[in-house]
Length: 404
Image 1: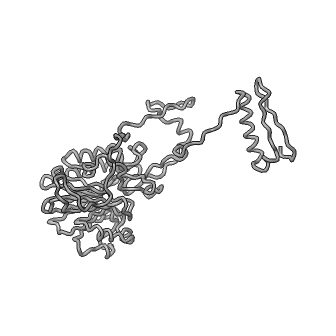
Image 2 (image 1 turned 135 degrees about the horizontal axis):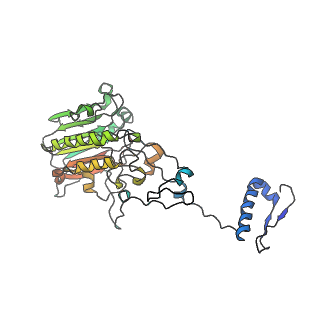
Image 3 (image 1 turned 90 degrees about the vertical axis):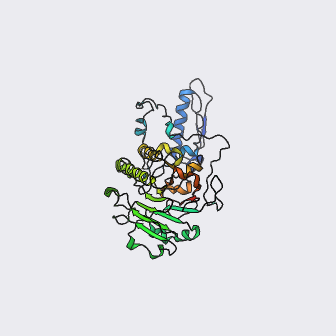
């Protein structure tokens, strides 16, 4: 092979002399290297020798097999890094779902998805839509039009948010109350432009510069404003502001993230969640409560894109965090969005900056309006404004009737 003359190569298989392959050496020499050609011929020869037949054509892999959907990042402060595909050795050692390891001699069966990670299919024709814009005619079930508009947004740094001209959001939406989380700024370093003469403004920065923090804008001056939970171990990160109004308490919260590697999971679930729930219960005993913010938990499998691959691995979707939120709801509170849109799908409020997640719609629902059960009669709408840019979260809005 390699000269200018043509060679005829005849390959004999068991019981047959009819099988042959003609090779135009000149033609192949122009296209590929001799190494590739002889590699091809070796495979053909092996197949003919063993079976007497040419090997079947390989089917092209589907796109979903060639490029697995990447796991999205975790919630809030930290996000899970991209995970490389496991090596062949790692694949061999994966569990087969029965608690056994796969042996080297066999592939084993793929473990079925856990029931709690499975998104239940809905009957054909089920409405899975949800609002992304405010309906100016939104009403309660008994026909009362909304009189109170509250917005909540994790802005991921108020200085960067301001530089993106997002103060225009306040003018466009004109909420009665705007709650912001993850301000990441000391009060003395706030850009002058974030102050608005139409609002009473309250800040709760973290002691650590450039970290956490919350803020509250209110057209109506609250009766009273307090900061934190009143427990020192929780109150140095500026995570909670409580405003008392005539008919209700408003609480905005930036719940601690369990962190990369779940390093703060124990603190989050065994200390913070318990104390925060108790705090809300005490308020609820006095007046109804509206609590909003970045709660850093996807409560159910439909509240994130890839539940199975994130369960108990990524902050925001561990059994402990989800159970903590379930316990909160069990104390007389409601997830306002799921009350109105129990079948809503792809209702994300957060997309990691990695992997172009927002364009691919790979997200999480981490931002909530939680209300006292006795406020359900006043609930008009709960909106996720997915089209609004400016952060890795989008704003959410609650519309209520009859509250002062």
